[in-house]
Image: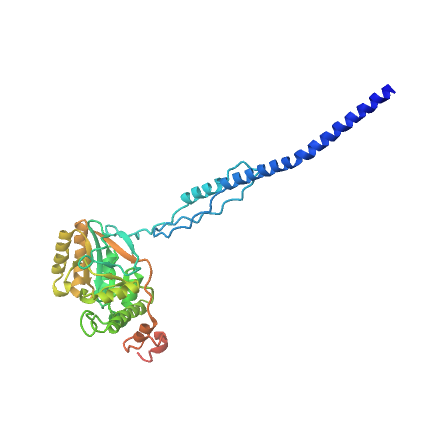
Length: 370
């Protein structure tokens, strides 16, 4: 009996111990779950802290080279030890190393001893910037000894082709401000200038002084004189022309400067006015230009391809420019001018502009006897 009692007591002790272990396990289970949850939260916070931030919106830039947009960051993989910031850093490095767009080179010159262009500059005409220190002091883009050649009042038979030959002989380019009406009379000459790579701007329809009446008191009439010139030169060129404009007699009413700004057309005055229209000998034109250049050192030069004495003077003028260490800069526009349909129609209605019949000569004129 005594032995039996001892056995029963031992079994009861073991049962109570087992019950205590089970109870203890039940009591610690919620705490373990909570610890696991807290650990998961810490991991999530760590991932969030190391993940790459979203790239900021790119700023609008005016530089010719624009870096490509950054690719999105790679998804975060918890099983990897590579930091999440590695992907954006690699993208930045790739963008920095990416090749930039090539800047257009100065056209090659295949004529030994020719002067050749020193530089080509692109003009952004947004908002109607104005150039030429005779009237406008804002844009001083020429370096010492640099010259821009500009010609007004063409195109004109014999004179304009002679100017073009002199430029071609020296591998040079210039800017031509054409009168619209003249362009309708001689569109073949305008096309020659376009084919040679010259810059073509406009100089009103019929060379009216827009600072005088009736244009000074009638804004719509003045706009028509400007816009018909733009439309006519564009039609004669049969190609895009520059949003470049020069006022006749360099008379620039403020309200018309504002209008051109709205049209994103640049206005050009001059730095050096040759006054070749008053000179009847080529050597006087040369003396006028060189004398002013020697005084100012650089500049936009105003000449007239309408004038025969200017065409005759140009070969020697170019030789003296080269001998004097001057360099020629060519202006080109960033974009083309946009004509307005109502003024296109007005030009089309001009009797002098025979554009309604486009049949080839061979179908219109036939030799029936010789």
